[in-house]
Amino acid sequence: MSKRKNILQKVSKVIGIICFLLAILCAVILYFKIQELGMQHVISASLLASSFFFAFVGVVLIVISNTDIPSFKVIDIVPPASLKKENSKD
Image 1: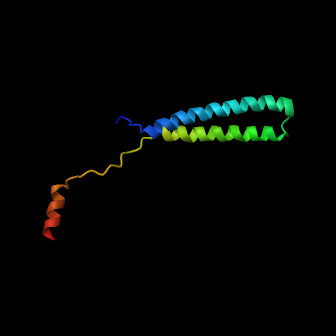
Image 2: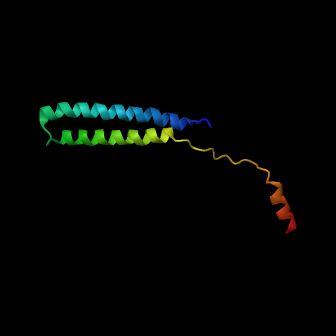
Image 3: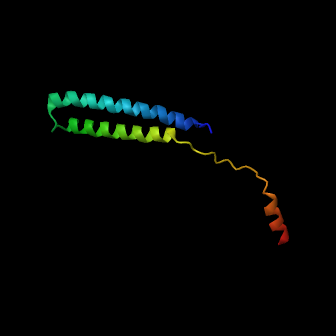
């Protein structure tokens, strides 16, 4: 069965990739700020928290985009003949 992707799943994948890129950017900036200010500075802690946050948001969004979500459309299904017989006996 082929996987049908919803528009929101496609958007989720794009935003997940953007979050990974932001996590890498925060890690690079963190490296340079540690050289300049040290690890005890508030900026270093916030950049570390931001890179952690963006990395795991990216993971969650990529997983959401890769799932195969079934269709929840309600279809009119004709019941099988055996069920029609059981209902007519009542």
